[in-house]
Image (cartoon, rainbow, N blue to C red; front, top):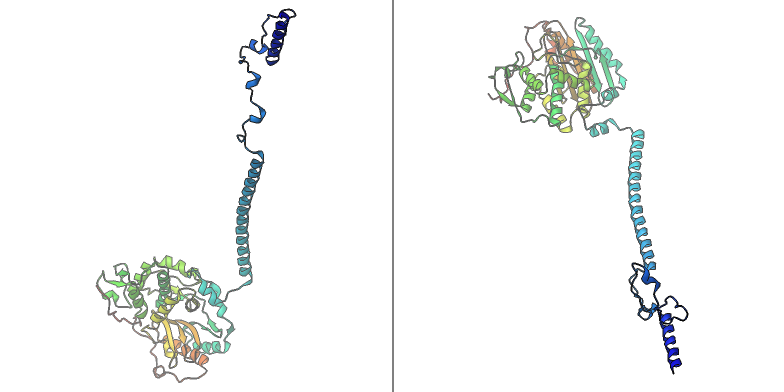
Length: 432
């Protein structure tokens, strides 16, 4: 019986040993306690029975991300990033190609296309800088027959110095007799001054209705009646410009010169137009003839205005309207036939007389003419010479011969009292 119990006890101890492995007991010592080797470590944990260990089938699932899904998601995200980058790069590349194409197209057009003078004038955004060679492009054929006739007239008055230039606007025939030589301008200088005034109107620098005041520094004698108005008299800028041309008023001219910045500023403007002889050296009256022009310069200015190279179309129309109202019509207009129109400006001091304008003929032809004559003081033969030359030019373009004017058949006195022949009419609307 005892042996049986001892056997059972040994079997139980063996089972415990299998459940909790311990150091094997020495032989014959059944009472030695089994010691777990892990219990000797300072951080040993309590023994865990095998029965309490979690089974493999009971491990929690779903807490870790699915590796397959993560890979798919990463691939999709990388693809989206590459797609966005590709779209951005394609847009940038497209923009650069478009800019390059436009630049190449513009360059090729600029190289292969030569705009006509009319197109250039239309596209000219800065009319203060015209192409100087525009008027020379009008010169096609020298009118030798007409030139010979004019020289013959001038030879009859050998002590007079005639300078003249004529251009047929449509046909290109021209006459140039000493036209590029500087000569005292007298009041013909007011023609380019009017153009400069209208340029500043176009540029918004001057308002037509702004008030200009007559002050002591601009008050001038000789031509014009504004000088008789009290100091402080005010006129609109447009009215002042009209009086300058229509009545050839020196005071009004000085007011415009002052408003435009003074003589030197205007001289720089004239040079920018390609004028070589035109210069203002003194305010008016310039009885000594220090201010200069040339027939060629005057014709150039009129041609540039006519082609829209200097001022805008509205100002060009205003320019022509004002110039057609010039009150002194004793020079170029006397040589024109019935139905002809002229927009012009005269000049007259003791030593020089002249006239320059654009003529429209009834037959549709148009020409520009400028004639100035050096003379003995106030010698009226110079005035008559201009009338004769004007008549010959008109007949040449008209194809007919006209009888001389009645007044030109009478003897012309060689001298006059030393006074300016231009009108002294008083402007009616000048207000103190």
